[in-house]
Length: 265
Image 1 (cartoon, rainbow, N blue to C red):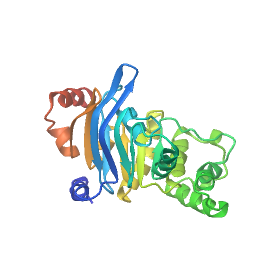
Image 2: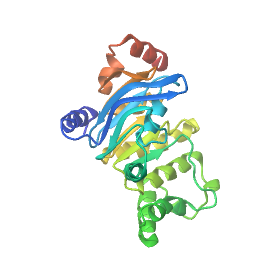
Image 3: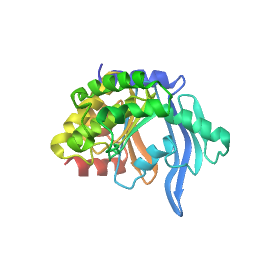
């Protein structure tokens, strides 16, 4: 299925209940207004790529979706779990756990436990968070390690892996929680250029498999090839968004045009 066909399907799905729904999202760090009233719907199976300069609010926005950063105002919903900014109390803790179990996140850094094997890193989350029996979690871990091409590394420790392999283990770890949405925060920025492709190939396969994905990246080729929708962000707002062919070939906003001229030349 082409990106255009998936985008069309996503547009139809958005008319129903989106998997991710963000309304009027604001984030202040002291006097710095980082997110300025952002709205977003993401449909089931849609791949949304967010591009823009460093400091434009992309990573903060992603971290607000699973409340690694607490929004200052607005509301976030993931797979039916809705949390308004400023919500407090026991109910918030319960809803946060539900929301985070529906979102997998992959960071710039890999954050693997150095004292655990690859398989232990991948299978620990289902045991400790979801209370899945360890034997079942191990089977899940093996399945997702195979999916990212690293089952043969199951008994290795992270120190024995390349940076690209570590990031693929991090992806398998997130998938092992069986999320509804995968969030990728510049997942290749810490990798040597020759290792970037192996991580992007795993992400391309996830897109083909129908995983709903929100990706912050500077990899314009990936955005062009895989995204259903590309969003250009600047100064805490979504300036322009649309299918990749439109954004990359016929951007309408001068700010988008200037950014793409710099990064594509």
